[in-house]
Image (cartoon, rainbow, N blue to C red):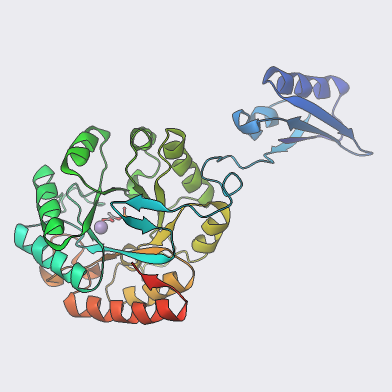
Length: 339
Ligand code: PEP
Ligand code: MN
């Protein structure tokens, strides 16, 4: 941490800052210039905040030197991390496809969805059973019964499963059911109790970006999970709030290379929730892969027009198969392949 004193800061104010640094167990290093005095707090500064110092008389501003997130930071782990689940690697050379309906609706729908995903070469079936959408009057999901349908349909095609956990009290059910990867939805990204709870297990967790979350907030949310001991974290960019209502969310392509620079953990993209419209999804999916994402999460439904949740953004069987054919060619052009 570097603390910049005001030009007219009194010696007693400089001393007070030094005392505060020492009280936190760090060393201080004072640099007296012609116009400003700078004070460095030397040591593990993560227990300090700029605000602690900026509230003190004579301080102009304070800033971190080290990253606030430690475990998820590439500074602490320069190589890419690969997150494993039942033999599937996320973040390795192979791209991963997670697809399926927004919501689990019926055994038949899930069987057809699983066949669709497996037929297109996907390895993961998604399906929400506790829906966390904006309106309380929308379909809220089938609950625990839906998890049975998800697991059965996936097992029938040899797929792994992903489902959203929103309530820490349901974690044991997800573990008992054998859900392979836990999805933390964008509305829960800063639910600290939930993050701590999934930090205690060692199942992989997909952490979606909050619709108005900065990269720093997102990385710190992941650090909550990692600090509990679970380092199996996959970031999922799903678009952020923008001023233009033509698109549900604004897909932040820059987030992919920025995250790749900041963290060693895998980064996937959900172009379906970003676009909110099935016809826009293919272009965003191609852009995400071209920008370096490790995989995609796509809404796909055997009969989009009948979907109980977000029908407008689900790819139907034909559109989904066409997109996957394009994405195979794109991966090959980039020297990658799908798992
Ligand atoms: C979802 O993946 O079903 C979902 C609700 O997405 P998000 O949390 O990104 O809105
Ligand atoms: Mn959804």
